[in-house]
Image (cartoon, rainbow, N blue to C red; front, side, top):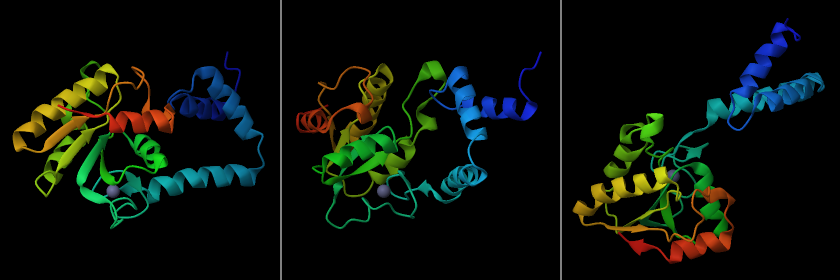
Length: 198
Ligand code: ZN
């Protein structure tokens, strides 16, 4: 027997498809949303639609941004010759919060994960290699210390080293499997400063 209306079921299904949201949370959120004033729901729905319509990849580093070129890449004070490779925009934001990194970034939008069928062609590696044809002194690989993060770091290092560009890896001191965004700024800075050449 279907306990809820088809509309509610559809909403629960959509919510349950979001990362980290199980079926129970999806039900809780669905009922919360349905009980909100109509204006609140409209504002929420529009925020999603607007973000989807207006957010794009930075033409240089591929982070998510409202502009063609993101604020970091368009900042003349940043060192464009040092590129830190991160998994996603959240990791970029974590490093930006330290306020101490002066280079630029390259956002992969994922890591190589053979078990999940994610290969090098599925993340922004080709785009990174194109950037490296320019004037670059160092590539800092700051993927997470998960197995996938390490695999990706090794893969990148093998690709980049023959070009003669210095390749470094942030120090492990960062908890294994720890998502970069949850690590405090001091630890992030220590990992950056303690980076080792690959
Ligand atoms: Zn950018």
